Length: 186
Image 1 (tube, rainbow, N blue to C red):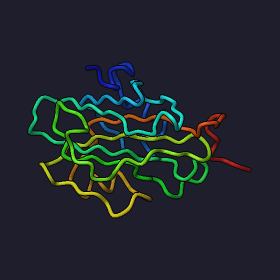
Image 2: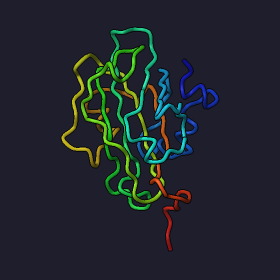
Image 3: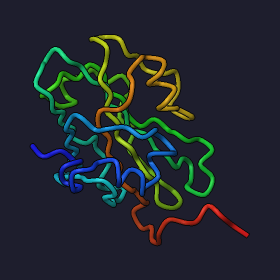
Image 4: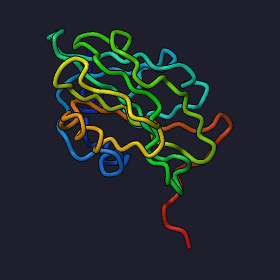
């Protein structure tokens, strides 16, 4: 199974930098575990653009590795909530699955925060799926709320270290159009 990093030309961090996921959500890291994300039978790679109708149902997320005794936490956040121009709710937690054994997929883990389908109302939103290696089973727990989630702080709280894989996609409303707006307005 090819990882998103391999499909991106061997260096998974570069698209995350260009998409400003590194910076807005994550610090620089070195991907070391493969992760495959499939929405509506579409294999997703960094920067993929999806409409709301493509993300109504949770994605299938497969995790690499070779030891079933190693567990991972997957989170999915909106880096642009409620809008790219004014992301004052950044980050919004859409999904969290803990205790995913290596070599399996998210259905083998525990859905700690139920999947909430992205429904962007303005602009193009960046959604990041981030995978962390856990210290052990049942060592990561759901936050109290979804809005103003902080991936860095979450990782620190549970001693997760740097991500082992990450991928982002862009999502816009069903009849939306246009590109990302500049953060600078006159």
